[in-house]
Figure 1 (cartoon, rainbow, N blue to C red):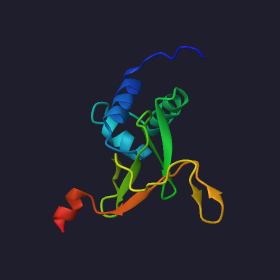
Figure 2: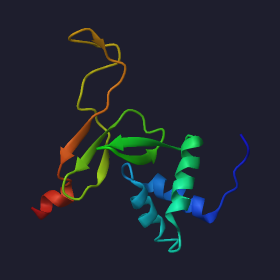
Figure 3: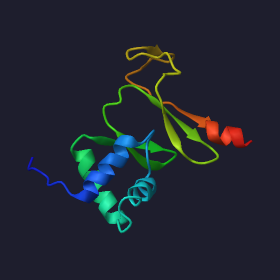
Figure 4: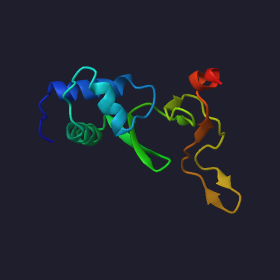
Length: 128
C-alpha cells in the first residue's frame, strides 16, 4: 500500500471519528468537522471515510438501514439508538450472554451477534 499524505481535512475528520461517542452518519461527521473547517465539503468526508476504512482505522455499521462509521478496535460492543434525537451511542456491556459456538434452538450455531437497543438517551429522557 502506498503512503497517503496527511491533509488538514483528513486530520480533522480522523479526530472527529476518534472523539465520537458512538457511530456517526456522514452528515454528523461533516457537521462536526465543519466546526474547524467551515468550507469542508461532503465529498471530502466521503473520500476520507473510505480511506480511513481501507486503512482499518474505522469501520461501517449499518443501523436502521443507514450506514454510520465508528472507530475500529473497540472490541465487542453494542449500540443504543435514541428514538427521540437520533444519536447512537456505544454500549460497553453486552446484554446478551450468547458466546460464539452456542447452539441455538433449531441447530443454529452462533458465530457472532449484534444488538441495538432503542429508547431515549439520558438527555432526551430528562426532557420528558
